[in-house]
Amino acid sequence: MNRFKRLLRPLLIVLGVLCAVVILGFVERSSEHEPITDLRVLVDGAAGMHFIDEEAVRREVLDQGVAVMGAPMGEVDMPRIEDALRNIPCVAEAEAYRTLDGVLHVKVRQREPIVRVLNRDGSSFYIDKDGWTMPTDPDYTARVLVVTGALNEPGARDGVYAVHANDSLRAVQLSDDIHRLALFIGSDPLWAALIDQVVVTRDGEFELIPRVGGHRVLIGDGRDLQQRFAKLKLFYEKGIPLADWRRYDRLDLRYADQIVCTKRTTP
Image 1 (cartoon, rainbow, N blue to C red):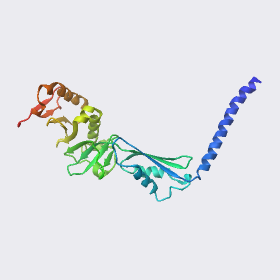
Image 2: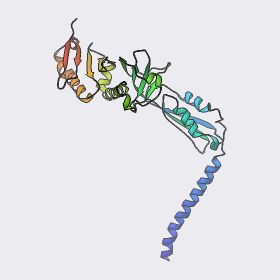
Image 3: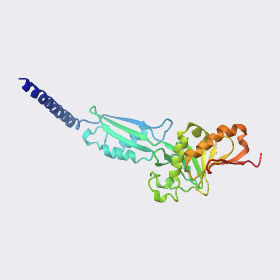
Image 4: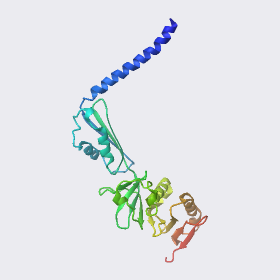
C-alpha cells in the first residue's frame, strides 16, 4: 500500500503539469483572436536624453501599413514592429509583446551619446556609450564631450555603425580612439567636469581643452590613458598649488614619467 502511494504521488504531479499545459495552451490559442485594445509605450534612456519620446514611438508603431489597434493579437507582426523601431538611428533596443488583456506593450531604449564629433567640413555625429555612431538631431543637442580639429570621420555620412568593428580602417579613422577617450573622461567625475572639448591635431594626436586655466593638454595618440591622466592629476594636485596655472600655455603628457610644461609667452 505504501509502495502504491509512493508511485501515485509523482503520477499526480505529472498529470497536474500536463493539465496546466493544456489549459495554458487553450488560453493562448483563444487569446490569438482577441483584439488589441490598447498600446502602452515605455521609452528608456539616460536622464536628460530626449532624442525620441513616447508619442514618436506610438506613431511609428501605428504607421506600419497594416491595422494594429483592433486587430486580432495573433495577426500583429511583433518582429516587424521591433525591426521598424530598431531602424530609427537613436534607438538602441526595441521589444514588442502582447498580454492576455489585449494590451500591446512596446519598450524602447534610446542610444546614449557620450561624444560629438565635428569634422573639418562642418558635418558632425555622435558616438554612443556602446560604440555606435548616430546622427545629430535638429531639434535636440546632447550636452556631451565635443571633439573637433583635423577630422574626416565617416559617421556623419554612413549612418549607424560600430566604430570598433573594422580594424582595417584604423589608419584613416580615429572614431574608435575617440570613443575610448570619451569613455575614460566620462568615467571620472573630475575629468568629466573639467574637460568638455578635445582637439585633434594634424598628426592625429589628442589635445584636451580644460574649462579653466587657459592651457591645453597634449595626451598623444590616445594610448596609455590611465598613466597619462594620472600624471596630469598629480600635477594639478601638487604642482599647480605652487604656481598660477595661467602661466602655462601647454602641458605635454606624451613622455614617460614627466610632464613638459610650456610657459605662456604673453600675459
